[in-house]
Image 1 (tube, one colour):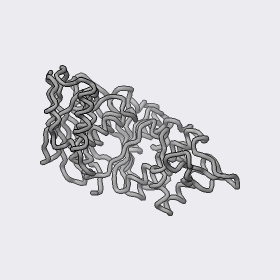
Image 2 (cartoon, one colour):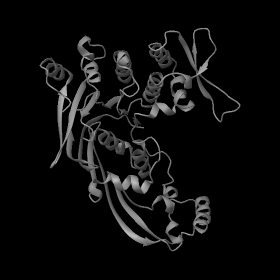
Image 3 (cartoon, one colour):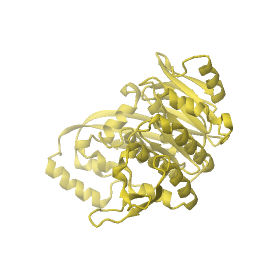
Image 4 (spheres, one colour):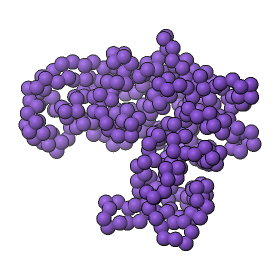
Length: 368
């Protein structure tokens, strides 16, 4: 997989964002702004640049809520601005131009089994679907069909989606990993679902594991070890933490702040040479831990060649990141972007960490 760094990003249309250009992206990029101004949508848009896989786009649209609460059909329909325009955006990644473009139409149809004769549906899936269709008596019923024209640079293809109750979940393309770039997203709720596979990324790197333990000691100075322990009553190993000389205890008994940091650490381990997107970084973190946690985050990302994009509403979070380079701790370039919606498009203002500190010293509000 190629190393990834976004130099600039231009979004002509995506969700509520119109005609937005983000330039001069730094090592760390902090996205500020009011609710519903497009911060999370911008992170979502970046995920579309992972590679020429339509399945990746469908997964990215689910990441916002952390769960598949809506069908692929609904998630994608709501991604188009006003339900009718194209999704059109491009970026400079490692100095090269990358364009993502989607167009769609929705039509009323009468469902027929023949619609499932698609190269993306395996023989086993097809047999299962026939039973599903017969059991639900879907043949001949009215529904909607969405046709998607998807282009990623020179890659072009047309896909079809049906609403959830018309088995669209089985129409996912059967492709192995087609990611070109390592781009990972952490929602405000990702730390509520830490798995053994998340921890395994950390345990594989001994040097990183030692740094990771030191970060956890911010919360409990006696922590010595994080490990995976098999439980005969569980389907997979459980995450346990050993503090002092006591027996290891499950991660589930610890607070959300600890889980948040473990989740971030796992994402760093997975995002080497890529891009890490963190939505509402302050969620579940007490302000007294900001400086230590953010210091770990920036230094680790710098060491593993990871570009950061972070959203926040919190003024203390902003100040913590703005003051980070005063002591030249990591010499990371930190950019702040304030997003705002206007009738004719989306407005963005860019400030360096030095400029932002100057604004703050003058008592100027930088979040609007």
